[in-house]
Image (cartoon, rainbow, N blue to C red; front, side, top):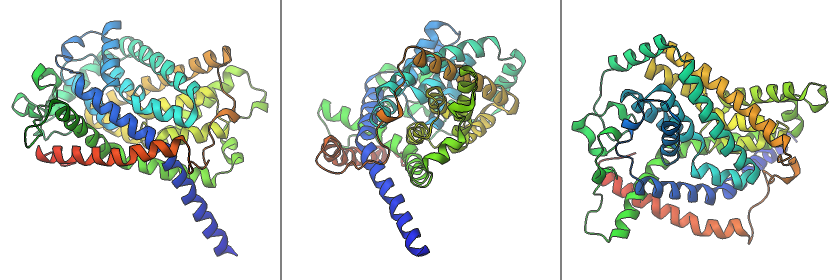
Length: 402
């Protein structure tokens, strides 16, 4: 009897896992492919010289740069590290970090596929509010002596030989062949300087090959995290009953003021993200589970935005900047995300834009059958496999095994 229950439970978990993979594969693949094209076609040369002061223009520029950069949080942390090494203001570097992890194409596509358009607009509006809030907080409240300590820590760091990795701050002019030291890019090398073709190609095929290289690198960086995220979320969704999720949050019947209820839910969302986060895209699945479990709209947005406050990311900040600067970064980011979650909750509830629990796609619905999901997967599964191996071959030709 017990063995039968366990086998049934295992089958249920695997069924949930398979259904979730089927549901998110094509939007994730499409988003990553589109992102790789954007990163290849839009040059980022001479970026850093615009970031020496924190202004609305510089924040807008870093937001745009973050949107077309990698979706991996660790890559985003390294890129923001690079900006600081190149004398960007702390506010601009943090704005880049936020936009690179929360305002990216593949996240938007998966968010719509899993949770609907209302959550997409919540993420977009929340991301913009967060960037503006980060700009103000880090410009006004990041202590000057802490910033000096941060700069000193950067100067004391021993440079290491670059290998086309993601810590671009350590690259010197002698090693700029990867094209990732943005301050030293020339327009003609904005594509990483990769002449990846072994033989002459058409202009179109050359662009496809170069874009595929970015796609393969993204998969290499975040593929494992996304897979772990799906596994963890599948287990949580399959095993945790609705009552279990609701026990985590504050009941609507608790009689608390609306603002206090929203405040507590956003705090809970941030806390859950800190301990359960896997990656910017992968945690959207768990966000959907939290929403089904009863967390508020602002709590969901706070959870999604908190991908820069996870325990592994905090350790990265400490390594890059030192303990005291890292503590200030985490503290100000926490305040900014909390404020943003409350703002989004107030805005969307105030104008009646929040969807009901019944209108969100079922997390464990079967996507198999002749439907839109099947048609798109039939297209994108073979296309993404071909695109991945095209990029892997191109990167291998440049000695970039990832």
